[in-house]
Amino acid sequence: MSDLNAALPWLDALKWDKDGMIPAIAQDAETGRVLMFAYMNRESLQETVAGGNAVYWSRSRGRLWRKGEESGHYQKVQTIRTDCDGDVLLLAIAQEGGIACHTGRQSCFFNELQGERWAPVDPVLKDPKEIYAK
Image (cartoon, rainbow, N blue to C red; front, side, top):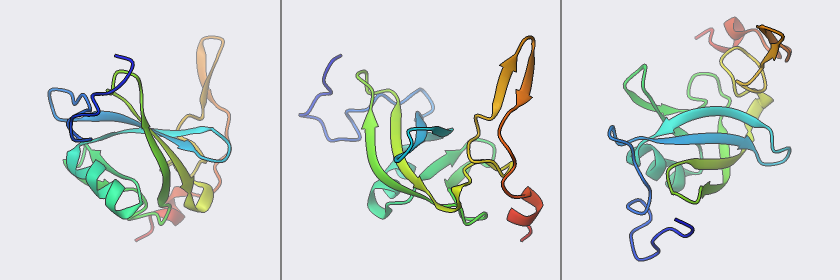
């Protein structure tokens, strides 16, 4: 599909998986760096659009996850795009505090394949114990 069905309401034009989820990639709006990957459901996407901060569905917690609710590292959404098939979202965001990962790094994509091993190649910017000390 090259164009989404413009006749459908915007949420219905998307392709949700059998669990009502759609993959969402958060990308730094300024640098283009991919910061994290998560899932959204209809409710989280609607809240994201209405409020301007990224809201995801936490599969491990079984509830809405308002990014930054514990860490203070909110994601201010600049734009939301979908791919040509309407089954993946791309959020261009401004990452408050410069940390998107719960490990205290800028990006969740910090492990690099080096030979036959994964190695962390990005520094920890803030100790997670300090971030989640509540």
